[in-house]
Length: 562
Image (tube, rainbow, N blue to C red; front, side):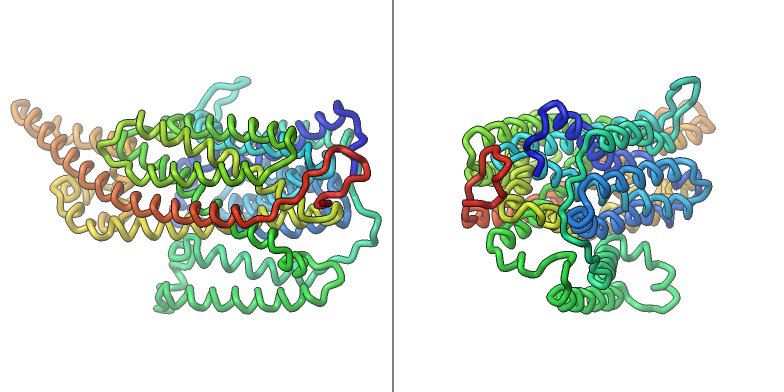
């Protein structure tokens, strides 16, 4: 451990690490606002899902492997590799000449992102004693909260075309922005960060890494955009999506079983099976999965709610999440400070998850008639609860293991939380689609949909029988574009008829919007109810965790000592 380093040196290290982590957290949200322009430039709407999925697969695979490698070879070396790979992937993504190149470089960027994620949280455990870690884990939690709002805003701002340094920005700048910050972080980490390594001779578990990679990659593509990714294969073979998923899940099961067998035999396993004999560890990773699912549900679908119900633009819908982000940052930093002072963490987990559960229940009461003030109050409460819960999970799992195992222990927590987010997003997406499908005929048969069904721009979005298409047609920018197109047609009519035609079109559009938002709201209610059950289950598990003492600052202290 390196508790003896000066506070100034620790601060420089942590600022550099948090800057790197901020880029990774930012990348997960900033790209969302640029996707439309990317697929438009490359004319590759069918490849849209791969731009996101390629990054998600490599990040998820890399996290546990990078955590183990950092335990073997040292945190600084692996972290520097991660920052370098992430910066290189960002630069190459920005200069991509085709969508296939972009997908490839996004996968490379994801490897760097996974390495950074695995090590950023672990370095806190290397530099600070258990009792001091709370405040730093809290600050890292605040970084994620800040990135969730800055990402969409910055992405939209850069994509819209700004004049900077004599250049005009576009979607490529959402990648270029990572380069200078990443280079500065790389230099500072290389100068100030100690090796942070163990003395034991490294033995790499290649077979375990390969099996884990296969199981995680196949699991992700079996739950995330499966129909889109395998559209050509399904059409060529006549296989159903259910049948394909059955095959994919079988591969996951076989690879996972082989991984468990190999890990029992490996000298330096990627994920030691003995960890699962630790009751607290098992409970924490289950809590992390449940938390990841529910948190993604609230962030992702609250943004859509603001766009569908309040007619907010993508940028404005991000700004409307500020109350929740403010709550996250306030409670994350505040709880971290209090944990470091009193040396206890379980009470904060209990309060945080309980508050988040109550807030999630109230989210299920949102309707198209709800005011934004009502939503904002709920978001503040939700943010306060989740801000406490997020950083404490890392602190709790680190406190269960010895110093030389912090890397894999911490990255395991991140892995299961990421899996929860991925699976949760897929399941919630299916629930949303299913809910709207029950109303799709009624919405599709409206005069508005019938009148625009032959529009060239609408056909690019998708078939009007598809729930996602109907939701997209209700987005403010799409509605404005359709209205502008319709106005050009109305201008060709005799003047007395123009006003009547525009009024009828507006009434039809309003009727369509009302039906879509109510169908969306009903589906969202179900999603939030399920999310509240997930958070409530996590809350119950929190109460069963056996709290261990957080050691005060001491060079001899070892995490997990009672």
